[in-house]
Image 1 (cartoon, rainbow, N blue to C red):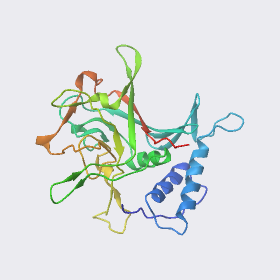
Image 2: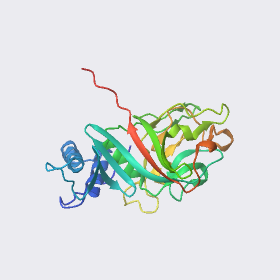
Image 3: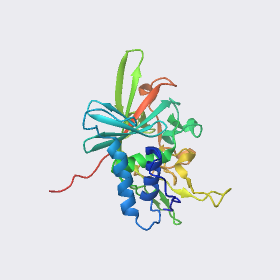
Length: 272
C-alpha cells in the first residue's frame, strides 16, 4: 500500500489531527522513528478515552456507563471499555429494496446500491479500526488468468441500532440481517473483513497527498471492490448481471431512519 505524506504537527493540535497522524503512520509513512511516533499518537488518543482520576471526563470525550466515547471525525467515534474497543458510525437508511453492492456508502456517492449512507470521511473509520486493534489486510485481487483472490484482514462484526417509532423502542440487529442472498433468500452468513482500501495518486494534483479510494463510496461492501475498506472475504461479483445480494426489505426501517453502526474487530485470543 502507498503511504500518506507526513508532516510533523505541533503538540497543541486537537485529537483529530493526532488521529490523522496515527493513520498516516500505520499506513507505513517513512520517518526516522515511526514506531515511536505511532505509539505516542495512539497513547495520546486512548488516554483521552479513559476517565480522569477524579471521575470527571475531559472536553474531548463523553462517558456513558463504563464506556468512553471519543470523536475521531465527523460522525465517527472510538468506544473504549477497558481493553475492548469499537468504532461507532452514524448513518441513515437510503435504500430498502433492490440489488446491492454495499451495506454502507459515503454520503452522495453510491446511495442507489447501498442500504445506508453516512456523512463521513472513510479515513476516520480506518483510523478508528486501527485504534481498535484491527489490522488491514488486502483488497480483492483480480488476476490476469481470471482468478479472483478474496479480500483479507481482521474480521469485523457489524451491529446496527435504530429507533423503531411504531413500536417506540430501540432495536439492535446484526448488520448481516439487512442483506440476503438473492437466490437462497437467506441472510448474509459471513462477517466483513478490514481490507483497508487503497491509496491512489491524485490525477489532478500529483504533488498532493494520495486519495483514499473508499471515499469514492466503497466503505462497507457486499460486492468485491479494489477500493473497499470493509469487504466480504468471499468471491462476490460487482458486475450488475452477476450481483449476489439484495436488500432484506422486510427488516429495514423507513428511508431516512437514523442508524448507529458499531464496528467491532474480532481479534484472535492470545494464547497463555
